[in-house]
Length: 291
Image 1: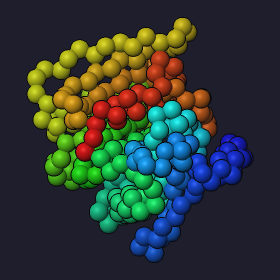
Image 2: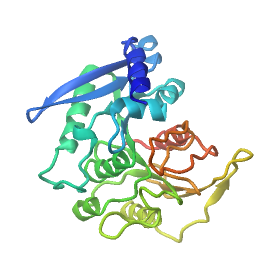
Image 3: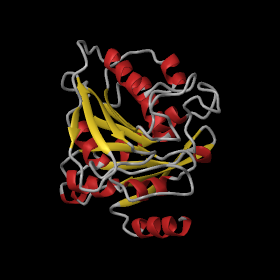
Image 4: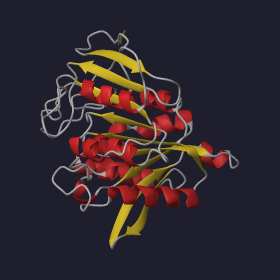
C-alpha cells in the first residue's frame, strides 16, 4: 500500500498545474498540504473557485486520503479546488488523546492554510467547505463549530459529533451539515460512545437544533442501489436553503467512504456501499450552501 501511494503521489506531483505539495510555518512546526486545482483553473483565469478541505483519517496521510477518496476526479467535473492537509503524527486535535485547547493547533493550521490560499489562488471565499474520514471527519465538525464564519458547510464520513467539540461549541453561526455513517461501523459506532461522541442520529438532532430547524423529523427516503449490493442507503434532510442538515445512513455499511474502491489495511472496516458516491453527494450538498 505504501509503495502504491508513493507512486500515485509522485505521478500527481509530476503535473504541477494540477497538484502541488505546499507548506507553511506555524508555531515552529512546518505543516504540509496538497492543493489540487482542476484544469479549468488555468483555462478560466477570471474565475474564482470553491475550495474543499479533505482531512485524512487517523494513521493515514494526505496522499492516502487523496488516493482513497479520489476527490480530484469530482473536482474536475464540478470545477473546485481540493486541499488535502497533513496532520501531525497523522492525527487531528478533536480532544481525544490530547488537550482540546492546549494540544496541536489544527484549527490555527486550517486558518493559516485558508489565508495562504487566498493569497496564492483565486478562491471563492463564500464557498469554502470541509470534509473528512473518521478522525478527519471529527475535525471537520470541529471546524464547523469553531469557524462558521469561514466554512459554509461540512460533511463527515464515519464521524459523529465529538463530545469535546460539543462541550466547547459556542453555538454561533449556522453551517450546512452532512453526516454519513454506516450502521455496521465497528471503528466509530453508529449508536455513539458515552463520553466520546454522540450517535449519528443525535448528531443530526444536535446540528438541526443549532441551525434553528424546527418541526418533526421528516421520513428518510431510500436510495436505490446496484444489484448485489449488501448495503441499503437512506437520506434524511431537513432545513432551509443554506443551513440544512442531512444524515445519510448506510445500513450494513462499514467505516468506509461510499463509492470508493475497497480499502482494507487489516482493520475491521466493513462494507463499502455502491448506492452512492460520497464525493458527488457531498458536492451536491455543498453547492447549495454559501456563506
